[in-house]
Amino acid sequence: MSVILDSKVPGGSLESKWTDHKFHMKLVNPANKRKHSVIVIGTGLAGGAAAASLGELGYKVKAFCVQDSPRRAHSVAAQGGINGAKNYQNDGDSVQRLFYDTIKGGDFRAREANVYRLAEVSVNIIDQAVAQGVPLAREYGGMLANRSFGGAQVSRTFYARGQTGQQLLLGAYSAMMRQVDAGSVELHARSEMLDLVVVDGKARGVIVRNLITGAIEAHEADAVVIASGGYSNVFYLSTNAMACAVTASWKAHKRGSYMANPCYTQIHPTCIPVHGENQSKLTLMSESLRNDGRVWVSKKAGDMRKPADIPENERDYYLERIYPSFGNLAPRDVASRQAKYLIDKGFGVLGEEAVYLDFKESIGRLGEDKISERYGNLFQMYDKITGENPYKTPMRIYPAPHYTMGGLWVDYNLMSTIPGLFVAGEANFSDHGANRLGASALMQGLADGYFVIPSTIGDYIANTKLDKVTTTNDAFKNAENDVKTNVSRLMNIKGERTVESFHKELGHIMWENCGMARNKQGLTGAIDQIKKLREEFNHNVRIPGEANRINRELEKAGRVADFIELGELMCRDALVREESCGGHFREEHQVDGEAKRDDTNFCHVAAWEWNGSADKAQTRHQEDLKFENIKLATRSYK
Image (cartoon, rainbow, N blue to C red; front, side, top):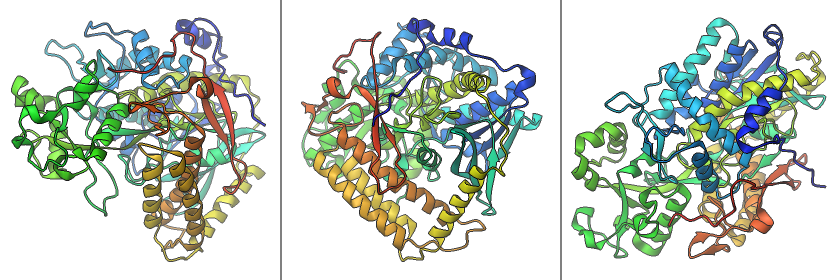
């Protein structure tokens, strides 16, 4: 039987919901905060900001990350910028416009109240970053600089050259380490969450594996925050760091936290194309490059001429042609689909799966020095990887898996279906609907960590009877035994195939059948293939080494096992959703190559409930989406 998902969106006008909600929340006085503890899983922007803020408030915080330092969290890789509705450019921006652009960009598949709060808080995030000393770019006169990003016709994106994620992460890291020094935050690096502990229906702790010693450890708390990022590595080749995984979220899912919209994945249009069978990661070229770079292919299919030999009148600047209002700044899902469409028809440049991103016109207009000032480190990175100088010849780009809009279902307070389990940043099913606009991932992570979680966790603690729980509790012992049993099972399979080979095969299945385009036949076949892959993995994977010390293959095996189960759910979610919206493109539902939504039957969030075994079908629940402030409309950027 389907349950009713209560989003807990407060009443009142959209503009006053968050302010009124905060006023009516119960507070925990400063002396009592010291009596309560919170576990934070992940120390990227969302996790680091949450740990820093909760520590500053006086809570006892334990923060966990798989990296050797929080500075290596994948947030460091974000390049282009962070949105903020400051309207410094006086070009018509506002909180309302950022709200509208985000709802429209997500193809009307996001919750209005959450998105408005995100837009509202965005202005505070910029102030927070500046106060921390984050070196955001400035105009000659000293004002913070802005640039444009996909899906918007205003310049609202703040940036630090092509290193925005790194600089914002250093700000959050510094704030968190201040609390580590003060003793309010206890940092556990090289630790991976392998289970969630639920006591009397509430999240009360985690089981982690020390990745240095192999020791299985239990930690208790009054609330748990998962901020462990997204799951794009299910495709094997993605822009994500190799350590990015779904494991923390998936373990919580198996304990009762619903997984929402897992089929909503984002394909980024500007990545360096795959260049070999042994490649394990793809490199992103920031969307900010599309401010000054023009995307094109030859008008002649199969054209093998070098770009300099193709005259202007034989070039197809297809985004400018198809979407004149937005041009090269069309949203990511739209730009990616058009690139794939042309390449599939034989227009890939130099016979490859690639299109050009060309800076010749902007260099001629602005000068090489100005382009270098804006994007120099990105150009250097491209040159180092490809051996080609993008100042002299166009970049070659192709779409690749990037961000995931799906994740654990949360209500307005960012609490999952397990009381006491909060989910922040990319790990939750987010505020982005079926497609994320560029420069909003950093915005959401910091909004959740700095401004939402600190308020809503306090309200939960103040309203909830939390008996003292220790790791001697049976729930902890049982969870710890489950983890040890699973580790032992993996080590004892002693098959013949490497973990990497399984991950590659899964990635191929997912990319071909649940990637940029999906159809019923492909999804049905993928589900069968993944079931067989899971069966073989459980009987034929080989993990060398020992469990009680550093063992990278054991780490990867656990993560790939979770990816295999997630991959099947993604395909099932995509199969049920008989519409095209944002990054979810069902080939059966399109009009002239554009996504065709079905608002009558699918204007809802799909949230899946684990039923105890990978062999049992999961139960699909729905949260209906209501649009009271924005009228549902066909999404167009023409």
